[in-house]
Length: 151
Image 1 (cartoon, rainbow, N blue to C red):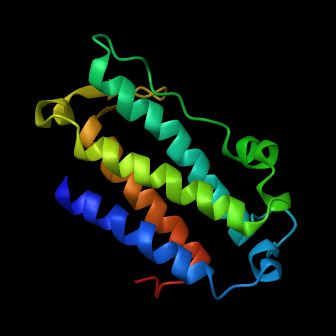
Image 2: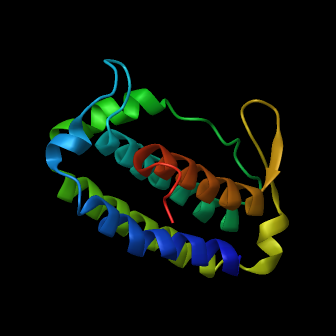
């Protein structure tokens, strides 16, 4: 998990730097009417953190794991209103949430990482897989925001 935590901490430090050179207009521009702006993509990553935080916590204490249910991503982004919020607000939320995600991951007992959890589509995954998938998903969307040269 050290590599995962290191990757996450890298982005917690780097993402604010990368956004600092973009204007509010640039981050609010939607490439197409039904596509998210860069700010909304960052907001989606906040939603991902919110949903996964509770998964990572519950996975450590529930004796009978609940089915992991996917959330309505477009509805979350719309209802959270990221497009209307200042970038500074969305960015601050993202940093805070991911700082907490990193802290939680760091403290997960090794034996819990191989516990399996059912998804609503019938697939079973380990807690370790969910954590790795979380960071992979985050990096996928950072490439959408900043391009392939995100490092």
